[in-house]
Amino acid sequence: MTGDTPVHITAIYRYPVKGLSPEPMDEATLAPGQTLPFDRAWAIENGPGRFDPERPRHLPKINFLMLMRNERLAALETRFDEESRTLTILREGKQVAKGALETRLGRQMIEQFFAAYMPKSELRGPPRIVWAAGHSFSDVAAKCLHIVNLASVRELARVLGREIDPLRFRANLYVEGLAPWVEFSWLDKEIGIGEARLLVFDRTQRCDATNVDPATGERDLAIPATLMRSFGHSDLGIYARVTRGGPIRPGMALEPPQG
Image (tube, rainbow, N blue to C red; front, side, top):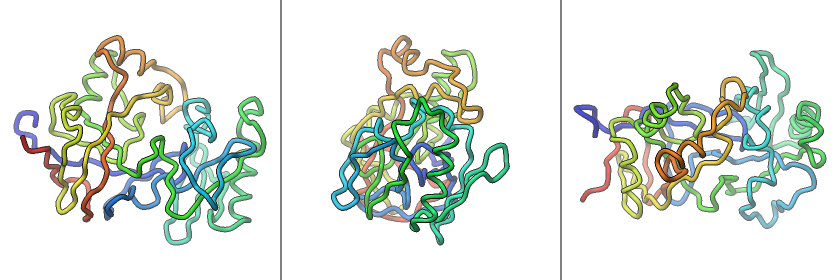
């Protein structure tokens, strides 16, 4: 805790399609061993793929379109309708593509857009929307939530001498009321949010995707290098598995580990 500010969740985000824009959530229900509902449920395979929906397995992110190499993705805004599973893509506020991700025609509409939108030099073949029931295209194999301490972001911003949009770190939960970096002491410990319980199991090693401004798509910072030079590590954020489910929403208290 920092001063008199209680530790609490300030925002919840999911990323229905890996590599595309976040969707803020007013509430969510956590389930044991699962991600946020529809978080990284789809991905855009870059050319002839290795992902088999009949035998889904975790693959390195280099198999998919991603911000680390494809910063042009950040210039797009996406909206996901959960009921119809429809993805709408906007650029500069104007709709440029729309398709229902669970229909072949809908996926083709999205795939055709990315085939035309992405530089040919960045494509290894026709883009393909991939999905499998219960699978998550997270950067880590475990189904989990990614949590970022906003105080740690501010400490990094202090070193850089400029503000940093926390959305660069593509977290599911943003947390306020902690000292910088204290979250790293939570490894192998349990945290609580209302009825829910989550077991922290790893720190988040940052990649060059964080160098891309999520608002402009410009590669304007060197965040992993700055972290290493200034703090002796390239980590910001933690991963946690849900061990007991329950509803969560922004504003709810987060209970740090006891002891």
